[in-house]
Length: 503
Image (cartoon, rainbow, N blue to C red; front, top):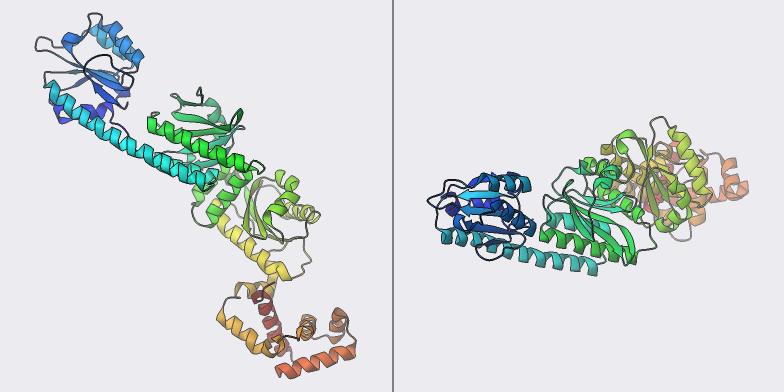
């Protein structure tokens, strides 16, 4: 983030360096920002005081204490030609106060002041422009009804440092590391309890977190935290503006579970490739889902709107350790994090039974995976299985890729022009309007392996009626339905047609 110059940057100016500056105290605070360079009168907080040795009061230690109380960024004393060093009492006082104290040998004060003020003015201009950008960016986010995750992402991009949004239970709802290590949120609950700041917005010097409350009126929802070395004005404004937009979003969606929204954002970001596996694992851990110590299975429930489905099974979802997200208009994706000693099949079977008691949906599952790098593949696999299984009837509590057989293969190949051409070549005359009963008869016949008795029972037809229909199908397709090879080809074509045709 663009900021005002620091004490160190002013000491590095050519005009200052010619005076051979010696830092006598407060080395650890040379990174303080300087809002102005003061040479006369009473300095204010954030200003760097440049003073002649002759102007320092006799009780220099007490004078320095008063300067520190004012919040000055530092004190630079220019020695006169008769003085070689500042008094020890003054140096000791500055060391005790942590106040940057610099002695400077004879230079042109006007030259130093002019160069320093030019640097400060450039910083103030940059700060002003950044404040304008902050205002514009967050105004746009508010007008666009941006969610908390988007606001946190924008805040981190502007601040160029990590930003965390937590609820009152100290759970991470949104997190953006910027260029920092994503592990910054590891053990977040414990770390959060150590971060203490007073007022609406405050800075905890022990932990280096700028904190602002998120809420509306008397209702406090959580905190927004920015990791920074110093609470610059721009960062304070940024944090408060971001918190305000988040509060508006929470108010607009007060009936929604914000943790579920955070889970949705996390899973969809992984699927779209916006998150790398390591960062995904770190954020999942911050949401209370430790992937590194889990066996993970992706489950997709398909057949109702995700919001309706989540509402019907909310009690079941609360008992699970995992993440959930809407994958499309009719699919709810769940990433289960199971213990290594859990029986995966038993867990999935219990989940499937409980879900079906509340909603008749297709339930698909991936193969178990053990690393965050495999999660995207597992979610995609379960989603594909759920889509492919939509037309079939399965004698299992949940469907996996290995259960789909030919139907699943044709679903995966449904967009291949060669498969589409095979459907037209094999079934074309039978797909005309008015032949739905013939298609159903052919399907029953090939599914039965050419057993006409079973096919008649499956279609509720008499044997003679079945024979008549099969004869008509054979004539339309110019095919010998008694041939196993022909039936196999027609079976493949029917499976491909099911996969291609809209449900």
